Length: 236
Image (cartoon, rainbow, N blue to C red; front, side):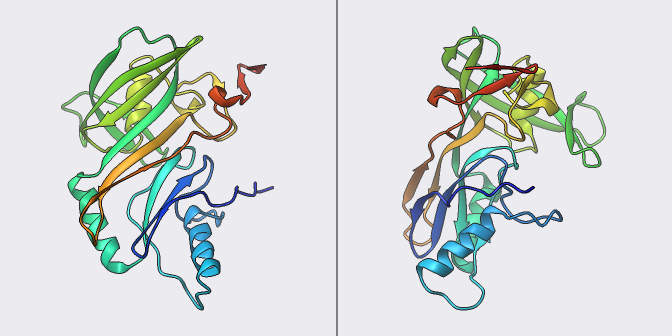
């Protein structure tokens, strides 16, 4: 039975941009499953709040994987969509991710450089040799924010934007993201992973001033009392 998503968590809103906090397990935009998406919820929010008849225009300018949570920007006009999409194409927005990984990360910070290749049939990204066919170079930087028992909370910034990049690079380095069983985590979160788009700074498409939007962690994260399952056993 489909799970009813929580109410839309609006972080920033004006006539040009809508920024929302996507919960884990929710699609950013619709796909062949037909499941309710964040975009569906945003359209209904605009339609109801502003009493708009007919179809509401909203443009998705970037996406988060279904199990990932955090800030998503949605354009409210075609002009804003074009300008924001160009920013993302040029990689000018500053995106800050935070994630809870398995293991006590001893290094205060680090840089990971790998070559990856996506297998679209399996929807999995693999680390490959640099000279492999279709290999793409990917670079991320991480900083350890704190240790939480046998886990570590990291802040991650990207130099490149490859599919599943944070997930596969951290797993390859021995730091799988909690809940990401696709990439080796022993923790199960029923379709979610502990990867969160915590903030994004972008140039407003009309006012041309920097806007920073931040999003709080999902309630199920253990820092706020959630319960997790590890190898079949519940733990706080």
